[in-house]
Length: 168
Image (cartoon, rainbow, N blue to C red; front, side, top):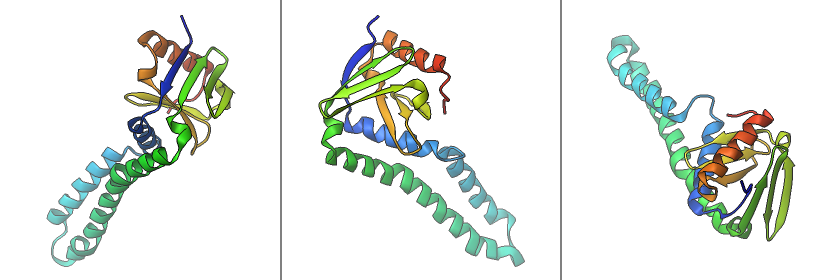
């Protein structure tokens, strides 16, 4: 099997990668935060009455504001920033050649090259359509699933898993 592929990162790939990296930093999944927060806000209207009405007057609006803020940041600001970053960075639009084996990965583009062993990475995260190889909490390499055949994708993931690199 050929362990090399070429791809272009799209703006949608950049948005998906940024959203995945951002959501990964949350200790609790964003959907759970929004669902539980909304349920607590609604339940508060039924539980706190009379002398405890201050909870529904002050605390619930604050909770709702925080929930809206989390949603706006994750679903509007992060994608907007990722698209903006993608448009500003010429290097992100270049063709990338990826090669891998049991020891690590080599990424080449017209502006540079990265040759890293699997254990040089901090961790890896897999999304619906791509995989992130984290160099640190803030930096990562993005490998879109569409760049590889199904057999290559399985082999790529198997090499990462066999390396012992932490997933999550």
